[in-house]
Length: 209
Image (cartoon, rainbow, N blue to C red; front, side, top):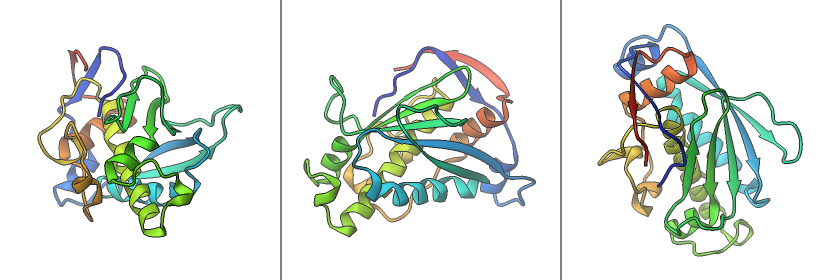
């Protein structure tokens, strides 16, 4: 996946309750990430629940609760930390790109999801959500949740490189998207926590892809 962003700052070196929780310690507090979901595609209603559940599952062990709001296009956007814009596809976006992110110096950050590309990666072809079986819709929703999580990390830490394994690998293939359980790594959690709390620790400038 590719991210759309400008040169930004990498958040590193932060140790907060979320990181302690991943290490097995008792958390001191929970954080809240306010997320607005814009279904511009008009066809993501059937997968919204599965996407929301997967995102909450991924961030819960990091002591981050997802405050999910379904937003409407053409009206004032709700106050949020991250806005997720769901498109069927977008002109000029290569077929293999399932999502993109934009880091903003002020809230909200923006994340895009390209549904047709996610369906294609899963092997569902170009069939719309209404043509998918319930089990396929559940898989698609879970996959979208993982794509969103990947892009949220990019949005909060635009200078971070992709990793060889896990949810921050450069390409989330069908095998990874379909496997039962995945999780965020400690450094990925620290980047998001640092952005949510406004305390990023060490700041390093770095170019982005």
